[in-house]
Image 1 (cartoon, rainbow, N blue to C red):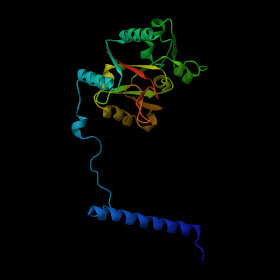
Image 2 (cartoon, rainbow, N blue to C red):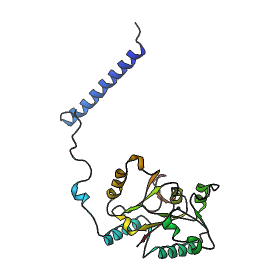
Image 3 (spheres, rainbow, N blue to C red):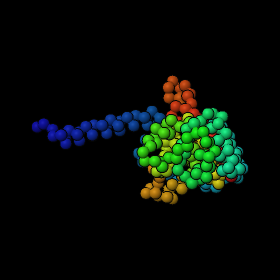
Length: 241
């Protein structure tokens, strides 16, 4: 009597499991030790206490972040306030001949008054005009200006969250990226940032959580390091306050 489909599948499953058992037993025999048949126990969860308690002073955080950021080709400027940030961005825009600037739609960035500081450039604010194709506008921008939500000194990483006012294209597509980092948002460890997302809960997570660690770098093609393939090739971290 011919096998039914169900019986045929059950036989294949049994044969596959028998081969798997023989394979694993063979490895254990060659290693000359009993085969492990139970999952190892993990009584501890998360980072150890000493790491959770590890913290640098603000000056140390700024110094370590700057070292790590520069080590991958990024630029750092330490600025006293938003007025200095506006002057810095305007000076770099003039130096590089930037004509198109796009920024996130955030109150802190509105206080920069880039439209006044850059009268010869076109400054666009993300998602303020329903007729504008904002991804295309960001792709043609010379400068993108974003506000950091967090930064981690130990890894030299900046966290930028996405929302309707904070499109990820602003940090991904322009040629040059300017990231304004309020000093009080600079943490020691990445874990201090990640725990905030756990506390918020899944239903309150943003549309995107982006970790930026300097200029775009890729070695996908024949291990040849190329800058600026998947994002801005020039990135400034402006630590303010």
